[in-house]
Image (cartoon, rainbow, N blue to C red; front, top):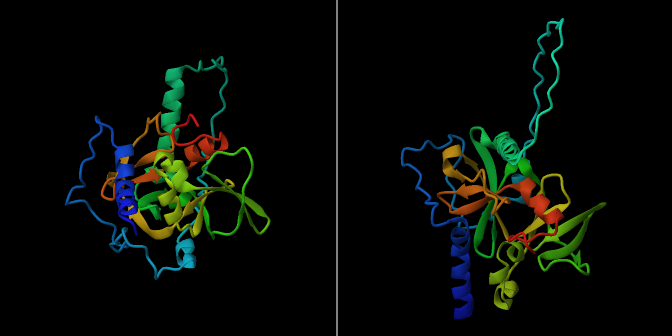
Length: 256
């Protein structure tokens, strides 16, 4: 490997932390006394887990089961009060969006996230929002699409819109040397959408506590970013926001 490519790789590893950390946002290191989940074994995210098969990772995806709660009878109201329609303002809309973020299931207690590698960067996705994992097969490119749109891949009867993750996350860093070094092997499906992110390696699934993530509830500049996993200095994706950007044909800077 050439010295220039090695230097480029080194820059890639620091790129995400530079992207996520503003001058007024200082990430505190996790406390030493922070409790670790009993059922989670320590993992080394810098090395791909070769022994874990794709089936093993997929078997960890557990669908949430809704629990029906008993409904209390409501006493009849003799005199109905007039209904007043709420006036939607920018402030109320922002508060509503913030409330929706907090309603996400992984924002309550511990949650599982899957980590994967792209061009030396580690990215995490909440396991509850993982739509599936497929092996990379032949893609068909389409005219008039952004550079990060790799093409359409057929999986059984489904058409998957494949995203070149490196080109989407760091377009200005993707020179020819980096592109030639990429070895995409997997497609990470985003929730129930037809969008899939390309990944080089599946690292592992890890249980995270709320304190291990620097949450970004009101990040208008980076809606695709749910937060930053502090210890690993890697991005935790907001899957639904990312899907919206991809549907709109927007790149990471939202102006593309």
